[in-house]
Length: 388
Picture 1 (tube, rainbow, N blue to C red):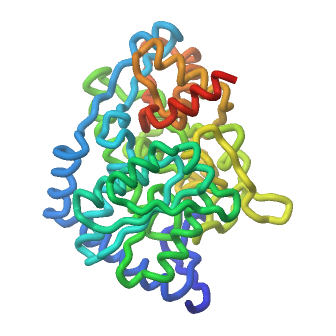
Picture 2: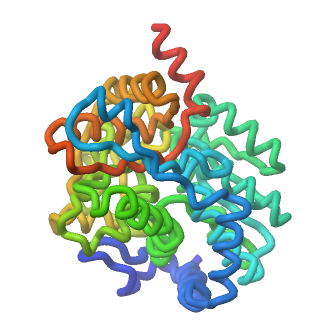
């Protein structure tokens, strides 16, 4: 590959851009052109909406968590039910959009990265349906704590590659996926799962995930007659949160709250740096390298964050807070017991903060929590944690 190239596009304030080899820059420039063309193409839009309805199962409900609201007191808590999507999380929204794009671009092979496994499962699912070979890179540590999702991907016909380099976690899986793309870009489409990476990926993922807030904004007005006081979502790379925030960004009365694990507080404590081909707030060690991170939720275990989240933080439009793993684990149990809904550990971080926030607001206000995924994948892990 040739020397690194930087383009002056795809920025959110000072964050974003594309810091990648020149040959790969050409590939992503083509991707950006094709995305810009197809996102406004009526047939593409029709196909995307068709699969969201008939395959994913949208639109999903905005559920009033009556029991939780009464238990906590204060503002009404609503749950945007991404956990009810086919494959159990928000990831499938973006996967459907990108795989339709890949088909139109003539790709004959799909690669992806995954942390918690939900994006990997969603990608494997869509590749099975569209009959495209798929390889998913996953940190070895994550393959062990999310063994069920590894089996699901393999059952769907996908090759799962455990990555032992580095910490054997999400960052390392992204490294390997990017290396694969560099080697095989002529026939391979990298289906990136979060709102990170070089331009145009953050914009692509936001576009396809914005269906979340498009629906919830209409649903909350139908139910409450007004907008919510806040939208709360967990943040790792940031795809569910950017989708949940998207249609509220121009509504200054709505507080946008991103919730991070206190063990990996990328937005709240990170510094501007380049990681995986883009500039964002990043947790750095003493040598200026991405810092090792850990969260009980594999999908939040990333030392960087989407560039638009970095901009929302530094511009003051978004509020970013942390909750501990113990608080998330408690919220996991509370929501399960009082609402009969078992949330993903990632989503449990958002639930934990929403429970705190609701108490501070009057009862005629509402909060939307983006329930980004269901907790089936985490039950064994939680069982072991609670046993100790």
